[in-house]
Length: 259
Ligand SMILES: Nc1ncnc2c1ncn2[C@@H]1O[C@H](COP(=O)(O)OP(=O)(O)OP(=O)(O)O)[C@@H](O)[C@H]1O
Ligand SMILES: [Mg+2]
Image 1 (tube, rainbow, N blue to C red):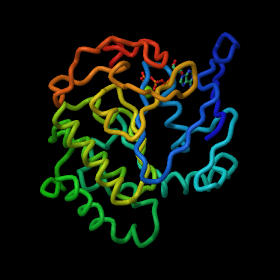
Image 2 (cartoon, rainbow, N blue to C red):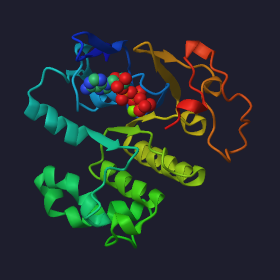
Image 3 (cartoon, protein in one colour):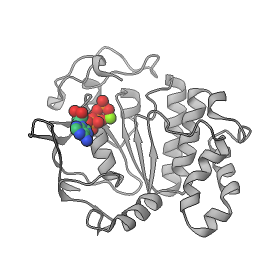
């Protein structure tokens, strides 16, 4: 994407300028982290990348094809085919079993996926370590298990672009590490791009590149240790830089704005 902006009208009649010219290029197989304090527009950006929302201005191409000017129907098809979303709060159906949750995307996919949906969903749940929990309901499962359902659902159509908005935000550090490992494995197998929003240093530094969003623009982060704090019980990373926030001008991504 180039020069992507997003502004929304405020009740006062003014516009809120959330994104003010985002340039971003991500290759297949590449893993990018996006960090930045609360309210800087990270989710807004992810929604535009995932075609859930449109830029106010600027260009966005996927495989060289304009992703903005397409009809709503074509955008919906491309969204379903190309993207897998993992949200912080899982967004899974509590009244449906693990298996039924993972089958949902297959209801909208190719006919052959539709007819094989039970088998494909069961295979994917096996892949995330829930092969023996197909008929369990989310209410009977731990946070980490629920996030693994969400990941199975996001990956079941083998997306080329995996978008994760704080996928480990509700998880303990060990489970968070497992979940990240799983996302990375599947991304690697499919040569998919992986874009992860996080407030956690341990998660951010797993990426090939770390970017930060502030003043509505993306900036490269040279040393994520200076803008983020590790989760508790990190893998040997010193917590000593917590709260040091001057790198690259990032504006105060300390512990206080963690969600
Ligand atoms: N449709 C909307 N109308 C008005 N304001 C909006 C709208 N969408 C987002 N905003 C505002 O834009 C800003 C960016 O929101 P966004 O959710 O993208 O931030 P974020 O970086 O993801 O924050 P967090 O880290 O808390 O998740 C916020 O101030 C939010 O209140
Ligand atoms: Mg957000």
